[in-house]
Length: 212
Image (tube, helix red, strand yellow):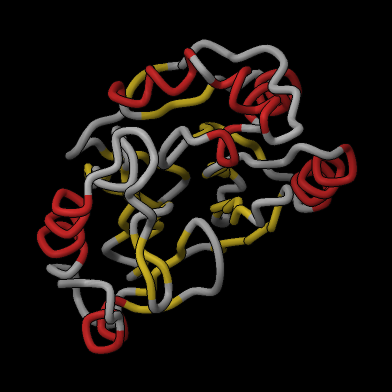
């Protein structure tokens, strides 16, 4: 059902995912490349495998997950897509980026907004958008039912959950998102988080002590 290539970018160790199949169409999820060597790594992989990037999706718009948006826009002519409730994060992105030592540069306008129930297609594959706020306003997860995986951004990690002490974070809302949107998926669904190693829905149901 296709390939998922994971890159780990910037000091926050963000998982940037490249999803593609035999059609060679690919989707970039959470373009976090910042340093020139990171940009080169992504660009070289795409060129080596003769891929055609068609969409750039942000699971949420905290600064560490959007650092590569300008690079993707300039290199492939693809503007980012994210949930409309993420828009306020871009009002402070430059200031927050500098506080962590990052120059954000040009913030590309969105190609469009994605919401719960939307379907994102690449080749023969489809991702269903699940709206999962709690870690951040506008957080979404991307679920491929046929291939049995979900990209969770910073909502759910192996053995832990996204922090809720940042602006727009809400613990109760995060618990609701996890229980109603993620824990209703099949137990064998592979979890690809925004940071750290992969997991599964079944594993997190049994072992994640942060979920109440």
